[in-house]
Image (cartoon, rainbow, N blue to C red; front, side, top):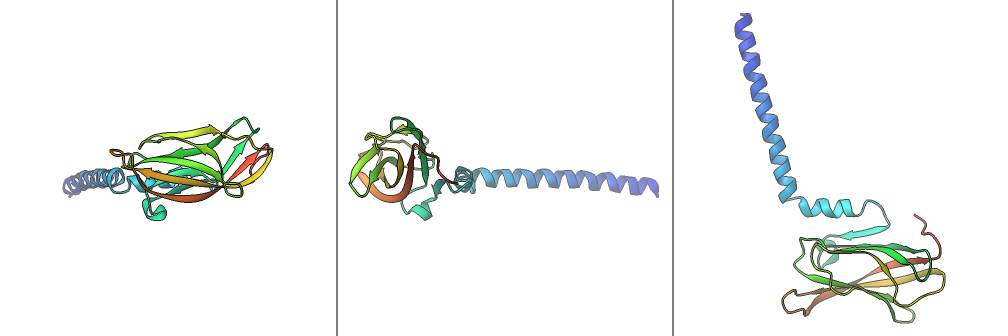
Length: 165
């Protein structure tokens, strides 16, 4: 009786281990294929200071840009955290505009899929203060370099002061 019970326990343990390995491999495969874009979007925006948008949310393509940008002084670089994920087929540019004057404060140039522009200095020096601005994100066809669409997102620049979280 003991031998039969021991033999059955060994077999059940082996089957349980095989089942665990199968479930683990399946979940890993799903995470790397089906949910990979979703994971990038969730990890890119852990707090309210950055804005990561999926293709469905943006209407254009997924990208990441900071909602709140700190610049220690008018000459310093701010952490814009602009990222064009590898999953995109488009090049992108970002232009930061001060809406009340129409001034272009920042232009990134082309950002290819998988590239980032984390830090950048403004092209026009503004006095210390808080500025409500608009980031215009434009998608470009990588073969023709023709614009494929654009959209705007509100961002806030904090020059010479810290953003409140």
